Amino acid sequence: MSQKPKPSHGLAACPGCAEPLESGDRYCGACGYDLSAVPSAEAGADRPTVVIGTPVNWPDAPPREPGSLSTMTQHPNDLPGTDSGGRDLPTAEARSDGPTPPEPASAAPGGGSAAPSGDFELAAPDPRAAVRVDTGPAAEAVPVPVPAPAPAPEAAPAVTICVACRAGRVDTDGYCENCGHAQPRERDHMERELAGVAAVSDRGLRHHRNEDAFAVSSTTLPDGSPATLAIVCDGVSSATRPDEASAAAAEAAGASLLAALPRGTHPQQAMHEAIVAAAEAVNSLAEETGQDGAEQDPHRHRNAPACTIVGSVVASGLLVVGWVGDSRVYWVPDDRSAPPARLTEDDSWAAQMVAAGLMNEAEAYADERAHAITGWLGADSYELDPHTAAFKPDRSGVVVVCTDGLWNYAEAAEDMARVVPADAADRPLGAAQVLVGHALDGGGHDNITVALVPFTAAPQGAGSV
Image (cartoon, rainbow, N blue to C red; front, top):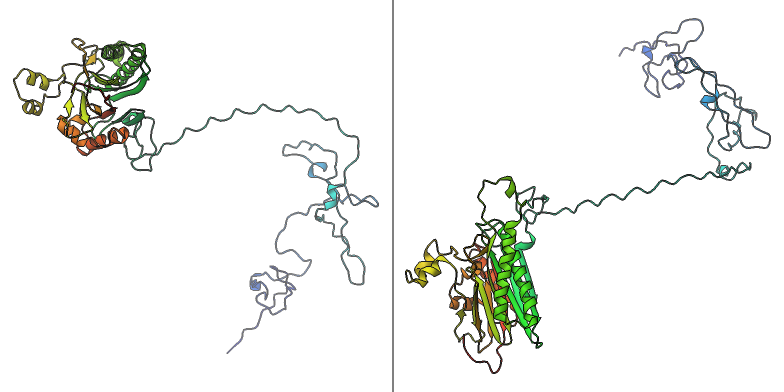
């Protein structure tokens, strides 16, 4: 094996790491620097291999005061010079940044001190700097105006999550931004229970909103005996704002009964007055302008708001019912061996056909025109003809006040008695929930509202339904 002679590089130390070299080294043993790439040294003065720029002549550090650990520190703007535009730099009075520990003397061979390098060395901070304070005259405190607190930012609106996909955010229009599902509204499902009465209303499975409304309450007669009332209204879907019409009618009728019964007005007369008050409340909606854009499209035909109404009052052993339209009242005795009964007659096309003897009940209600109503509350109704009737049952039972969203699935009185729970008089709210569930199980094609009023017969009761 032949060996090539090692060239002489003439370097005493590696240009890369300053490691001592031998004359025959081709690479630095410490950092691997390729010594063959270094140009050969020429005779004469030494030159740096790497250009490092023009050295800066920094001024000497200020001397320390005898017995002091601090020294004055110079800053760049303490030194004379010019800016980029050739103007003199401003000078500032030198200041002390705190005590600096003395520079330690470097140990030198022979026990002497190393010669100063001429460079500023950064000393570690001295913790005693925190306690050395200049004890000059205290400066007068200048009050600093405190800015007024900024107004608290308004709380971000609560984010509603879709009940269908459980991921999307519900927009202000009530629909999910993710899946487009319409969100439940307050009237989509309503329940209320008071002493002696309970009601449940549900949007159903096919309608986009609940156009039914109810009002249930209790009061006392002048003799101190209790009176319980239930009002159920069904908005006419083909009319304008049917949901507002039913709500206005239920509220007005309930308020009228609560005002009349404690005064001693006969319950049947009070029911008649309540229906009239409900009709006036619905009529007033037709007089309102500026809602849902009616004034912006005067050529568009718009029916006046309209609804049906049915109600019952139980007071002093008397059962009074009143209605306009096709919502109904059923009587279901606690003793299911006794016959149930329907206490109202529909204002509908089918009922007129049966009353005129032109069709039997099965034929009439099988016709597509069966549920076309002939009586309703609204400004465009032909005439207001409230129906009222009074009964004095001889036995206890429960009064079922409902819209056609329920009785379509239990039309005959016997059918209604079969679906009313046996404990309805003791648990009216639970029974109302069962009846709404029955309609939903049957298809829920319409809004469903039902109110249950337990009736307790007086011991000496006479007469029959």
